[in-house]
Amino acid sequence: MVPIVSYLLQRGRCSACSVKISPRYPLVEFAGIGVAGAAYLIFGATLAGLFAAALGWCLVALAVIDWETGFLPDMLTLPLIPLGLAVNLGGYFVPTADAFIGAAAGYLVFRLISAAFQWLRGVEGLGQGDAKLAAVIGAWSGWQFLPVAVLAGSIVTLLAVLSARIMGKTINAKTEIPFGPGLCAGAFLAVLLVNTAS
Image (cartoon, helix red, strand yellow):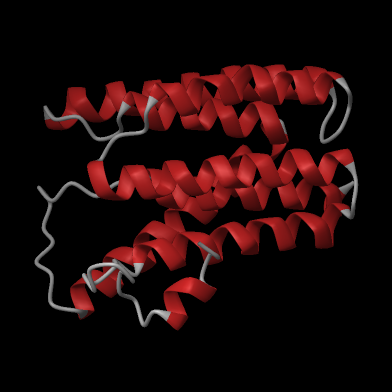
């Protein structure tokens, strides 16, 4: 019942039936620890650090879900938008106006890109979940850090695709590649950078 430690002690198998446990579980637990550690290093033992860690944990969950299913569930994504705006009403990360502009800009820009791609190619390129996640980024880190988050998310996604190709997976123009995991990484990076830039 102890995260990571139990997995290692039991050699990745269930103690009751010896069935192999997916390495996904300790990897997610490591990610959760990493998120908490990064939030503490940047913000210290403060409310801002707690808020950043909570956002990071939600982003880890969203990244795993999108990677496995191709969907970013509204029940996780949508509450993060008003929560980010509320946090910034207290001035924890960015000024309130920047947060509201960021949320609106993130959603609208991604919806416009999605509509343009569908008009040009006849297929959906970005899902609505990605647009909502972009609104989350804007609500938490302001409009100024949206490009940083999107660039970082694109790099992470590109590296994941290259790694998959190196491992022999066939990827072509019709392969569906979830952007959510990369965007989640970019979102957390953006929130951390807000403090270093201020």
